[in-house]
Length: 171
Ligand SMILES: Cc1cc2nc3c(=O)[nH]c(=O)nc-3n(C[C@H](O)[C@H](O)[C@H](O)COP(=O)(O)O)c2cc1C
Image (cartoon, rainbow, N blue to C red; front, side, top):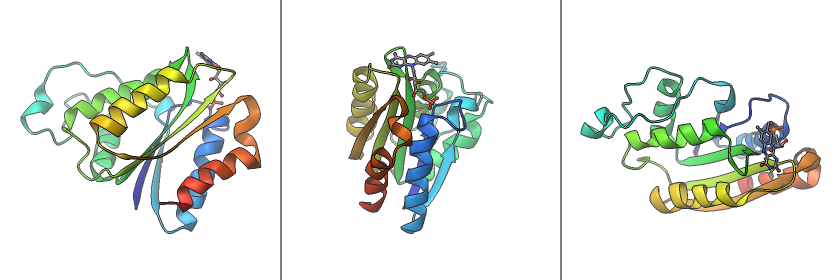
């Protein structure tokens, strides 16, 4: 399976990266291809609703930022993993911008499965889960393979990493 993982954290060795790397390692060792994109360290802007993309709906956004690299990966992915820290009770802003930019597709053409990994200092998962369920599971019609939530340093524990590894083994 061709997997695209969008990591919304700017921290290379942070909690979201720990979950992302454990998942990627397990996915690769189970024969899947995975591309990890550090969305939180990229230049990604929100949708401008210029509608230039709506003529073809093939991911042809006219904005020249780092989404030019991510959109072709979205067009090919069979599984999308959203990995994000909770920022102010929601998904990290750049992850939200990347989700908005999916507007340049009607739906991701090869997408079949999805998963959500969230990390937080304490609380505030509700809005991020709702966005994932409505935008990715219902609108994009992906099968939900699991939602993993980690609080504080939990993301770096074997137990929590085993939860994301289990998803990778179930694909
Ligand atoms: C701008 C900002 C906003 C945050 N808002 C919340 C929040 O609303 N709720 C919460 O529990 N933690 C919040 N946190 C803490 C992060 O979600 C938490 O430290 C997370 O694990 C960081 O992930 P990372 O290590 O992958 O970067 C916030 C952190 C930052 C920098």
